Length: 231
Length: 312
Image 1 (cartoon, rainbow over the protein chains, first blue to last red):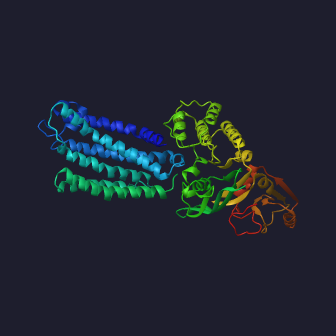
Image 2 (image 1 turned 180 degrees about the vertical axis):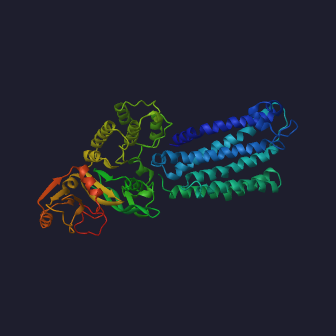
């Protein structure tokens, strides 16, 4: 049952994840070789603003590009996992399986979050491997900004998921959770900027944000799961 | 026989619109119950409430003695549900759909599934999105019955299927019913389908259960009475169990439930030139019963005329 549900969810989102990985790969290549890749049109977007003297993740354009790609990935995944079932009427098939509704939605969320966080961590991990192999400058504290962005994708994803399962009009209250999550993400970024830039403070603030925002969104998701009508 | 499905005053409002009103239904174990109604009569809403997919505004539903909103997975495993339109994951192959569905059940008859798929000539390698609607219905039926359910709830299972596929589908359904004393509740607005398989019917009209009786009893109860007059027909006085009254030229066409001598005497008092009483088949009986301008009357009521739904 567990395997079947993981497989089904993965099959439904793997296209999005693979596309995001391809875009991340372009971003990493542009970071590694900005002077070479910048001449290629498909890479020029990611290379803009980069110079060979930039320090990766610290003062180059990587985090800015990464931020938008990851946000798009998080929102697309959240919406895809929920609206697709609604639009095709497959909730009626899925939710009649002999498993609790809560378990079925936990599985959706876990697969979605695992895919999002693994995929979104890939760029820095790939860069780290490359940097170590080529004896380039790389220290984990350099990537703090990256991990902050990475971490803030969780509420963005949960907001999109909540928007997807909430019945309502798109131009109306339905978009509210996603908009609220999107508003909270830059606020979160600002919060990280005003605290001392070290991993301990990041961990503390991340934990606090997780409790306040992510748990709130999860509670809202499971409230909607329990109380909504499925068509 | 114990009741497998019980609803008490089941009511659903969408805003101010009442989709289902005070549904009191009991389906006994081993029976085949046809829930009839025109489009928008509330059949699908009622079924969704039965399965806990939709929350009632008032009232409650029980399946196997458990609240429909809190069905345990073990109880859900005893119930097969074919939703309207047979929703399946279209990107899956038939084999993948089987593997996915089977993973949820402790009890699963792969032999029965293979038999059904072979009967319909469906290869497990075929992708569901490439199947016709009829074939998708067949796959959905195969998946539903392979878990060996005690209760099948089918929401308009033959909707959108052509006549041949529909007949084939129903014959398979009958075979499956005959395999064991399963309980089946299915909705439809195709009366021929219901007539073939249901031993009891309920008619939902405007969200209200107007009829709940054995299929044959309903057919025998509804009669068309044509009164011919030499001049313009007179106004029809109030009459018990009168469903509808249409003036057609010099004729009055009446639809009456349980036509008896009292009716005859009352109609004769209007001095018609002739009185003709006609029988209906189920389809005609249903049409006449549900389309009349006075269709809102609680027709089968004898003791409690105020109740929304009454039972024969």
